[in-house]
Length: 76
Image (cartoon, rainbow, N blue to C red; front, side, top):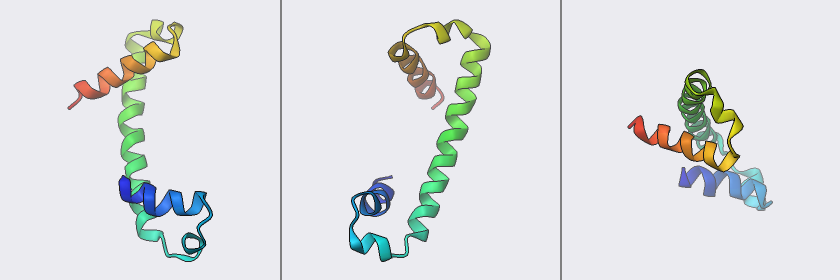
């Protein structure tokens, strides 16, 4: 994650000239894999929350976010 962030995102986002001309395909591939894994994990938990406890949609965002984090930690 650190390498993807430092070597990929930061170089491009902050306009480093070297970042614009580097081959970042390997870092992008790793980033894509991390993103897919994250979406797979989070989507399953969000669906379960909505299915099992739809009232969560009525609580403040901060509380709903903490509930999601707790579910994700419990999956380990």
